[in-house]
Image 1 (cartoon, rainbow, N blue to C red):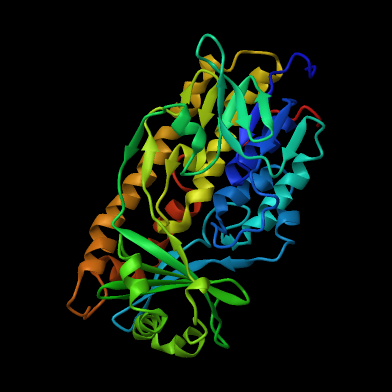
Image 2: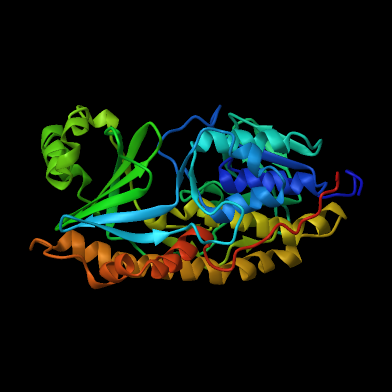
Length: 405
């Protein structure tokens, strides 16, 4: 497997999908360049939920214990407060995996960890502060590389892992299907009250939904509201926003007072969409570039990482041996299509049947909804949502070769 014979991969986007793909392709002996437009990974309010499916992949690579030595908190159960009652709805503890919990870990730590492992391989290059602006195309119409602000980079295969606002997928004219979402989210932090934490939980009230995620030293909070209402909420002022939060979670009135500026609140425009074709000759889209997931379940980065593993399983060994990747690109989409679309259908069902009616509701909620009452009453039932959220559908295993092992 000589470097001269192996095809070169250029991956645009240094998020979880791009970095995992970079690690696995380089590990298989494929010359791999990852482009990240920022100069570091230190960006807040990104997906920090590393689910059991992703932790299992690090276990397969033999580095799980090292990863879990980094600062993180663990979510083994999920609950929700409705009509003043604490209800238990999800349990991950019975999953038959090496780490049956969600690891809440700053994404910059995760990405630095993957980059450090990838740098062990001489085929790997990571170019920070390198923004892709489009693709280059040869005389046959095949994508032949990436245009950047620093110049063109030739590649036998370009992998677009540049997120839900992908520049590459737009220029490549890949067909996008909009599924839609009825809500947007404000993200912010609150100090933890003494004696609280240990599981992720939320508070549901008529017209609003507040998610509270234990991050060891603080609570990461998501305030869910009707799509398109962000400007109206902001126009009423930060004081009115604090009052909405206090009305939703009065027990957090003290920490809520620290939200004294909109600078402490970040808007997430929720999207749910997917490409109906993830590829064209010379280019493959994965992760959010191929399918934007709703924040429901926090599954986004984990679905994206599964895409990266599937791409490496199918493409890395043939490319290391000099094969043309184009005839194989459809197999990546074929492998991942059912898992992605099933999860998106489930998210849309939750949006349409739970989130949207809740946000439209004016009448107070008098008792928890029947499905929630059943999950709370029968502990075994909580394993099903635990499996779906924790492992997703059709989880993949690492099958790409280790050319250095």
